[in-house]
Image (tube, rainbow, N blue to C red; front, side, top):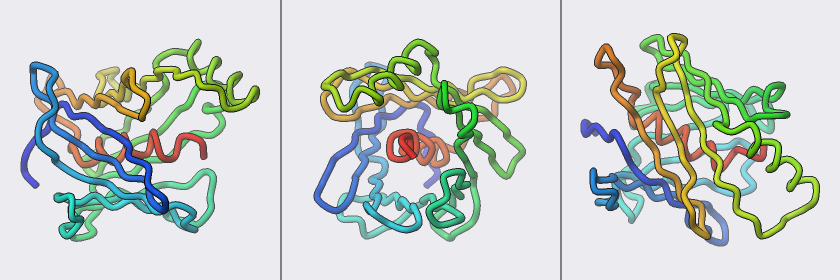
Length: 197
């Protein structure tokens, strides 16, 4: 796919055996546009894998991500295009994530970025609520991914809604570079699907 998507929404749909995520282009007016990809994650899989399709019938896989190892809490996930070529990778930093969820993101063209929950207060509140148990409290948590020079390359902002819904932004940097939207989409789904791992 050659389209560049600077902003899109990500919605989770829960079904019996799989988690599904819809990615839709987001217009300047804030309105959702057409479907740009549909992601599907099998539950209870020994090796985490999510495939993204270009159509709702799931006939045309276009990219995806997969854990390198089975059942590994510190797993690295490879993002590949439709032909299986690497376009990025990411992993959770479990040490730093004890207080504030932290992820590392890399691409073959040399990007190294770190993503963290934007608010330390919300991060701590989420952990306290996890200890107390499942309460019907919906905390909006956001992630910012920054390159080594401090420029933001990706943001994921949870929106107010009963179902998980996120707004994803992939800014164009000062030098004209932009993160591949497929890598951004994979990372955004992982922030929801793998956050509790």
